[in-house]
Length: 305
Image (cartoon, rainbow, N blue to C red):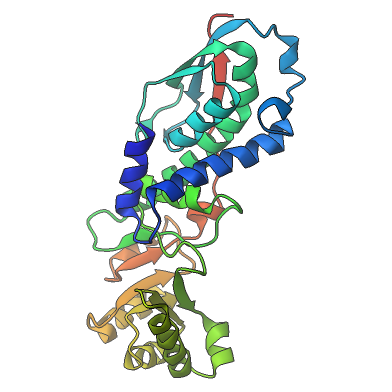
C-alpha cells in the first residue's frame, strides 16, 4: 500500500526526489519521533507506563476520527508500528486521501497491547498533523474549483516535516513549490536590494542556473506593476505577485499577457481565494497550509479489553 501512495505523490512532485528518498524520509521521521518519545530505538526504547501491562496480553483496538477530515499519513503510521510494535497488524478501512466523517473508524489493530500503546502517540501525531495539512489544502482546492489557478505550498513548514507536509499538500489536491533552497531560486525583496536591482538579480540567477547544468526554477517576487514590467523585461518566466489586491492582480494579468506564470501570495485565506483565482493568475501560494494547521482530532480505543 505504501508504495502505491508514494508513487502517486511522486507523480505530483515536480522536483527530483526519488521513491527511495521519500521512503527514507518516512523512516527518518519515525525514528526521530521514537527517540523523542521513547528515548531510544529498538531494545533501547523505554515505555515505563506500558510495562503496567503483561507483555503477552493481546488486544484489538480502533483508530477513530473525531471530525471531518482528509486522511493522510498512512505510510508514517505503518512505519511507527513496524518499528515500535512489530507484533501488531493493521487493517485499514480507509484509503490515503479519503474524506472521512466524525466518529468513523479508520483502521483496526491487533497484537500485543503493550506494543500498541507504545506506538500509539507517535503514529497518531503523524496522522493528525498530515491529515490537517491535507484537509486544509482540500478546502482551498475545492474553493477555487473551476478556475485555472492551482493551490501551491511554501517553505513555511514544521521543522523536520517538510517532505511529509509537502506530500500531504498533494494528497489534498495542491501542488509543491521547490522543496528547499537547494532546488530552486526565489528572488525576494532583500535579494533584489542586495543585488542592486531586479535586472542584476535576474542576471545572476540565470548564471547560477546555467552553472548547475540542469533545470533550476527561477522565480522573482514583485510588489508593483512597475516591478512586474521590469521583471518581464529581464526575462522572468515565473513571477510572484506579493500582496497585490484583486484590482492589481487583474491589471498584472493583463500586463503580463501570458508572458510568464503569475503567482499570487500574501493575505490570502478561504474568504478571498476564489476572488483571487478569478483574476486569472496561474498559481496561489498559501503558507498557512503547513504552518497554521490545527491537528485533526483522532483517538485509539481498545475494543476487547
